[in-house]
Amino acid sequence: MYFKGLLTIDPSQITKIERKKPEKFFKKLLYHLTAGKVSEKLERETFSAISILEQLNNVLRSMKIDNIIRLSQDDIDFYLDTEGKENDLQDAIDAYDLNTNESYAMYFNSLHLVLEHVEGSFNYLFEIRINRTHTVGEFPIELKINALLTEFRANGQNKETVRQKMKDIFKTQDDYETFMRIKTAEFESFIDRMELEIKKFIPIDDIRSKHNSQIVIPKEKINNPDQIKANQKAQQPAMHGYYGMSDFLFYSFLWSSMCHTNHIHIQDTELVSDNGDFIGDVGNEGLDTSDTSLFDENTPYEESVSEFESEVPETDNFDSDFSNDMDSDLGGDISDDGGSWFDFGGSDSFDGFDGFD
Image (cartoon, rainbow, N blue to C red; front, side, top):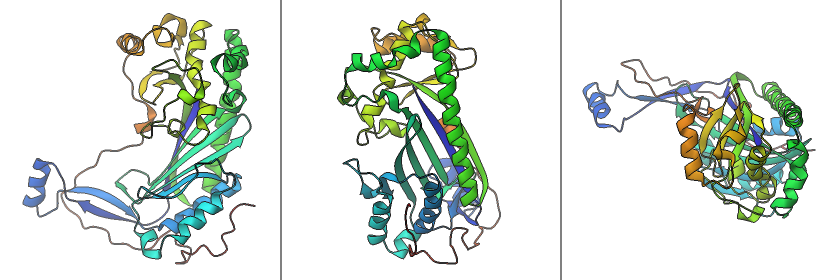
């Protein structure tokens, strides 16, 4: 079990609406017959990469988050920490500033940042994506947050040693519910604080927030953190294999079987595979984990998932809740408004950008 959060942000700024030539045959035909009036619309943000990094820095600085793992633009890594360096956000910004020019920073398609932060009970992993061009109605800034419990960090220890650390949580149903209630409240408080800091430092039109817990159902038994397979395509960044993350993630691979063994009743959580694939959602009605083979580590994964899917109605996870279908429009001019809420009087330099105190 670990917690996940999703914040999507719509900054207060002028955007340009552009039309994209459709790719499907029928829409292509309509596009040509209507001289381009029937087309898919996209929003193009006016901010530059450097200006938005300045804005995000203010938010991160206010929360004392300064440990960055990755900084990339359009799938090109300008900084990637493979050694576990700390307090290196300024190093990443310097590397980006040194290797880009004004034109390159202005006409980016996407920015991608991954950061790590330890606070209270959790090791937080943040994945920030900024999409300069996106479907109309979608928000250009997306922030995923994973929170892994630091008290069960493996530090190379094997399964039985970590289980011993965790056993008190599963002694009784009351013990489990008390633990979950305390940790959920702590995580929600952090999410609320981050949302407040975003509103404080970034003028926005809207911000949306969702969060819950995830229980991992491993496809194979693993006995130590080194056996966890990285998956860069997983929905959640905790699964991507960043340096040192397997030690924090390992306990979550044991959680489901410990629930099963101790007849724990769970509720309000999502079930995912060990590569992040969505299996199902457990709502307020809850589920007794001893009543299904899905949580039994001795039952083959495919068999247990098939049984579970036949018993539980299919639901959608919230990773796609904020997406909107692209629409078509029969007329109207394309907006050509300029300007940028991120511009800071037109300066895109990092002069005076001191990093973290």
